[in-house]
Each structure stands twice: as C-alpha cells, then as structure tokens.
Length: 214
Ligand code: C5P
View 1 (spheres, rainbow, N blue to C red):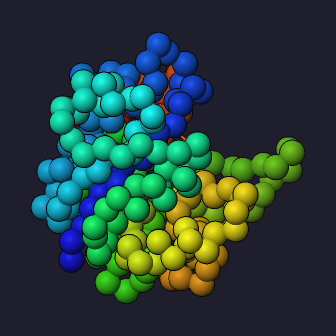
View 2 (spheres, helix red, strand yellow):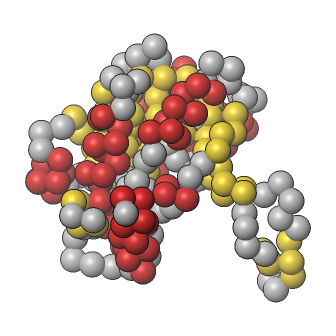
View 3 (cartoon, rainbow, N blue to C red):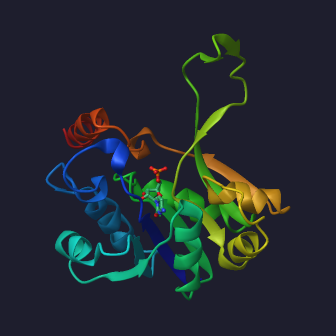
C-alpha cells in the first residue's frame, strides 16, 4: 500500500492567541507543526507527508519545516482535507491535525492495521470525567473522545467528500465516511495526542513531552 500522511494546518489558530498562528509557535523546542511532521516522516509505513497550509503561509511553513510538499487549504477544515486529497496519490491516507503535535508511532500502527478490515479507522480515548449538558449529567458509558490521525482507504474518503451535502460542516472525516455507510474501526488513542487549542494548552503540551522523555 502507498500511504500518505496529510497534515492539515490551514486554520487561523486564532483561539490560541499569540503573534504567529499556533501551528508555527514554538513548543518543546520546535515549531508545533514540526513535531507531527517528523513523527510521520520517520514512520516506516508512511511513504510521503503532505502539509495543507493557509494561503500566504508558504514562508512560515518553509521556515518551520524546510522544503516540504505543501498544498493550499480552504476556509474550513473539511475543504482543507478535500484540497489535500485532490493533490495526493495514495491507497491509504492518514489525516492529521497539526494542532496535535505528539504522534506516538503505536497509534499510527494501530490505525493502519485496522484499515485491513475497515474503510476508516480512528483513535479514541474513553471519557474519564463526568459530563454534563446544561448542568445535567450525561451518562458517559460508551462515550469516547475522537483524535487524529484518522486513517482511510483513499477511495472511501474521496467518495465521502464528494457525496457530502453542500453547506453542512463536519469536524472530522471518519464521521463523513460513516454517514455515507462506510465502516469505521475504533482503535486505542493516546493522551499524548491531545490538541493544542487554547493558550494554556501550550504549557500542557510542554509538560507532556517532559513526561514522555524523563
Ligand atoms: O480549529 P481546529 O483546531 O479544530 O482545527 C483542526 C485542524 O484543522 C488544525 O490543525 C487546523 O489548522 C486545521 N484547519 C485547516 N483548515 C481550516 C481550518 C482548520 O486545515 N480552514
């Protein structure tokens, strides 16, 4: 199988504050996006890594990653994924948020292995906290948090994007495949993959790395 990792990094990163978009801010000694990039590039099952960047971010991306393959994204995450998909040649694709810098190789292994028996695979973590909606407890049995990288047989993800209702948003690709009848396997995620969204998340991300390497 030819496997391409597609890292989506075309968001504004505005919720994280800061002078540069969060994907280019320094975390644990490197630009945020460089961590995920290098994790995929170093994985033996990944043949190519392609980065979807915002229009005008070419210089930022080159400063962070050197000369790598980039594609300009769109106004929503869904559009950014679709534009990336149109630019790659692959059997399997791993779609990953740049906002999740630390990608354990074991998660990549599990996602790819699950694609032998399903059209899509996503890492999930069981919810540990009590959850409420408007103050009322929601039973957490069977609830999980969904992470990336999500893996796909490329044809299935392309079909899901092509068949998606115009004007409707989707925050994740596996739900698109599932909605159109495709099979989605769940594999064990990893707390290292938690997303950097708000300003405080940078410190939490630094702490996770320190932990991992202590
Ligand atoms: O905003 P949020 O953190 O949910 O975005 C998830 C990922 O999708 C981020 O890595 C972000 O850069 C990417 N994205 C994108 N194109 C957009 C919006 C978000 O590639 N238009």
